Image (cartoon, rainbow, N blue to C red; front, side, top):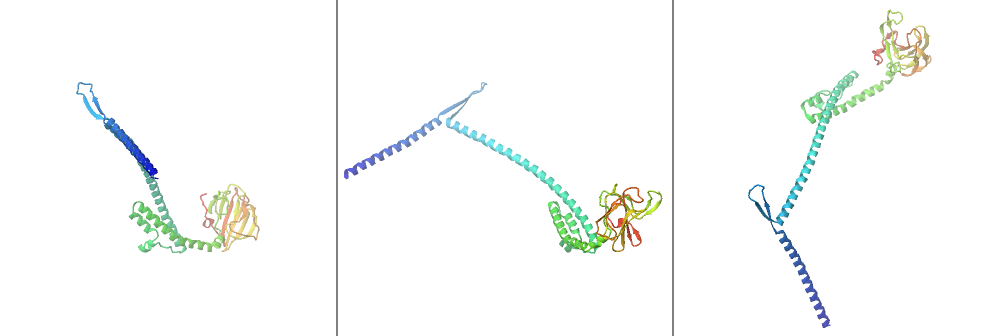
Length: 341
């Protein structure tokens, strides 16, 4: 046993000694390598600048390390220059794009302000029309909160605020005030709708629609004094003549009622008379054909016949009359038609 332990210890000492020598040799080699590199870098160089003239020759003494360091610094400076120059170009392009975008935004803002001004003018017209309609119907228009606090009516608070404010704040204030006004105007308009709904039957009993279905009609003769197309003398025309330049276009009942006459007359040709409530009658003359019978009940808008050229007539047209009792009245007062057509 003792011999074996001594042998192991000798081996350990030998290994440790070899490791120490090898480690020392490794670091010594590294140190020698750095020394060689330092010697190389510390090698002296002389740079001579010889002018073409007879001026003194310039000698610059340096070493390889200084040359390498100068080269590295030069490359770094050039790389930094190109990098920051490219960054500057990119930033300038981005700034130009932002300036163009800002210019477009300003143009859009100007357009928005113009549209806001147009909306503002439309609101004025709407306010005037609504106030007149509510006054005629006896409905009190609701006031906005600003109007109640300032004792102003309609849109006056909105108009005054636009004069005091400026820029985008003014437009935002206008839109907010206009929104408030329109919200308050909903209730009166709903009241008008309810009133119209309750009066719907009354409207259908009054001759209030155009008797010709074709919208491309024209008024060939108005109600009142006119020159007779055949005799050439002045006479009182007791109705309105509608022409569509052709026969066969539908003729509508202008109000609900009962058909009391379906006949032919030498003057009126084929004609229909409808009796309505409130002592009103309507006559439709010079028809080409009938679509109803005597005693039949019709609703407003029903087709009762077609335009024709029967009786004393110079061309296809509808002669339309409204009677209240024994009086003949101008139909234009009851229906919404353009007399200049």
